[in-house]
Image (tube, rainbow, N blue to C red; front, side, top):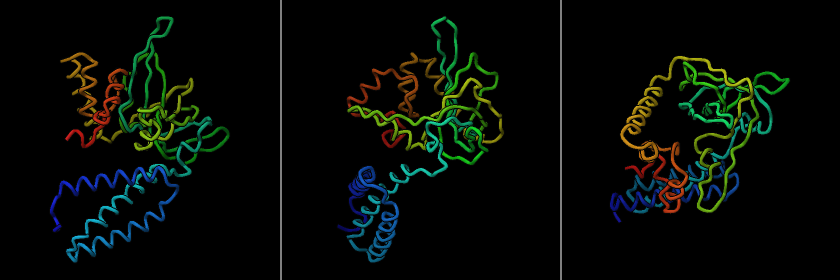
Length: 273
């Protein structure tokens, strides 16, 4: 086979090898140093064969993608000692930056009063344990809180937040046919969750991050337009297929996507192309 023939077949094989590497990364233990060595050898081999115009140059390239899949998975699972997940089960005071639009959900209590549940996605920068000084921290976490009313100026992407609460690890349910929530969050760098205490969440308004705020505003604009043109449940489904996410989707709809094996269409990926 000459170089450059059958590009679609080669692309399919490349994606298959990358996926196989990710699966192997789940089965094997800590092999990142060994994988980096194999990656260097395969890269040199591929360059030499390509320079010689050898018809075998595709083989080391495919194996290279296999090793890249292993490294990608294990790099995702390996956490530094400063990651907030290392403090699971302890009460901490954390400080960080909001990296996604907060999600406000109205809720009615049994006594008829109305509250709002809010979830922040926070890139942790510092934390403080009881009777200890502030120390550097890393990783991302979901910060959950409650409020009696919507604030005049809600937190935006790039604003600083500070709160106290107990660090909890995400729970990955392994029911047949269900998504592994733990791995899904870990792929996005989210390693823990914190429920804010009675003191709530203190927000520090900051400048900057204008581009990311503009993107969030565009997403919100499209969602509001969809909800004006169709029922909210339908708008949530269309929005999920365009922009990803499960917010607002009915449980029955998500179960139907899972049963038919097309649940990944709800995440922004190559399936949209």
